[in-house]
Length: 184
Image (cartoon, one colour):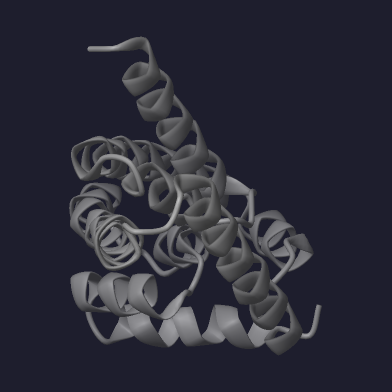
């Protein structure tokens, strides 16, 4: 494996773990940039991000088991997370573990909330992790695939620098809208 590929996998894994715990920018940002030059690289990085996100979820789950009040307080201190969003995630989990995780993953509900809510509502760790991996992987694969289709195929006539600037602009607008909608 080439050094650039290893760095991409390591960065995606670290980002997946960080976003599963306290970081508030999704690994999709990195994955969509990787997909502009190599779908294969982005797909492998998606797997690394999903695996490490599950590890981060396990760490958050363990923390929430030991200190549920502190875990909820930490969640509320993270940009973009509100009490209403935590309640919505609790409702999604009640609708079914895998279904709730997939719905949350595709609707932008932060995974770290699912880890805290699963721990505090009595969902066993192993089923939580077994449902987490495909839910996170689905989202990351979709983000990579959409980016590849749009930027590497539909806009392939544009210079890579231009495509990267367009993608950066997309993410800036996306997060400005997301944080504005969350009241932050």
